[in-house]
Length: 502
Ligand code: GLN
Image (cartoon, rainbow, N blue to C red; front, side, top):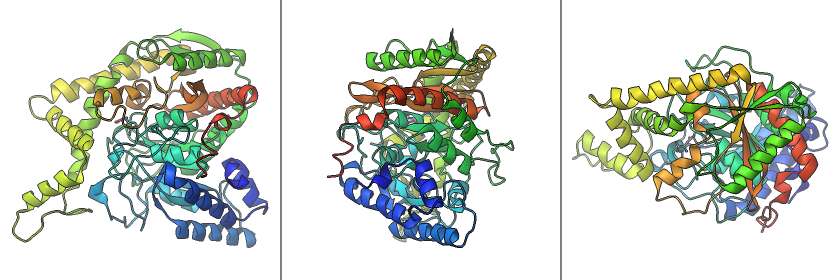
């Protein structure tokens, strides 16, 4: 493997800016790595080698002309396929969008291009971001670089696997109920779900609009922070975008890396542990809390009694919103059209197209959501779930009166085997136990690697109040510094990463 792909995004950016390496060489090194490992990892649905090299060349030309470069100029990135990219295939992991090439860029696609970040391609995902393993992709499963027989988490599993396998130093994911944090945790990388509205949703193919949020993946907290700043900020194209200055996350990551947390009050959420959590996960979590204490943080136990209803509320709200959002895939406007023989009615063509174009998990959710929203049931299901959501937000508000951040494991489990849970939706939904509260409250949360259980990575989740994303980064960076000082970088402990390079 080229040494270039081993560098952090920050180091790669410095290497390009100082002229030690050209952006084209850097892009080529990653394309070579992709070529070498994709046969076994399968993180990408589409690799855009020509586009990446052309974008890299533009960065090199700008540098040669003495023009100023943005902080991540020339650094490669993998983009989740739920984010629309002008002229490039965008499927959201679904057959119903096979062959669609969007006529426009999502705001975040536009921003990363403008920042000189080099997009390598589009990553695999659970269909329409519904899932926790990437096995719901209509195309193929992605493999966890730590153990190719295991899942890379989901729904942003292509993005997490690409970063963990050194195919890209950075990736973008989306998180509706945990789909950035859980895949980050089970592949040993960093992933952050920003405050709802802090990063534009314009051009994200909608799953559950009141929850969907794009965010960064990196191998270090600083790399994630740099990408966060490159993509965040108000967007007039998204009516739910927050018109507020971007939290100073890069500064916070730098500050946190000094390893001093004195004065920081860390709340351990009582409800996010115990039965159903793997013992190795809990052991790694407890050791992490001690490490935070060792850096001067004050540890308090807090209770958030309504968190236990998060799973039930989420699995009404998300399907309800998806049943409405996915109505647009009607065989007329996008992608697939089945049975249009001039004889069949529009309704028949729609029905045949949707039957063939959506996979089983998507159909399950459309049916549940349509039922929950139907007249007579709306108040009992959707209305009740929205009330639970308010109670969860109040639990956060109460907890933050006595703490600065809350911590928990990111997922109750380490990466599980491909095929192990795919036929049991309830077992799959339990992956989201720890990540759902912050999704429902719209608050920010990060996952940072915190140790191993059974030789597989475990994530520490750090949650903060809305708009205080910088606190997540500060605490995560402090934790990362102490972890790396004691154990070395977690990906250096991965047994098969080197081997996936043939
Ligand atoms: N696993 C959750 C689900 O299946 C979360 C998905 C997500 O965050 N996109 O809905």
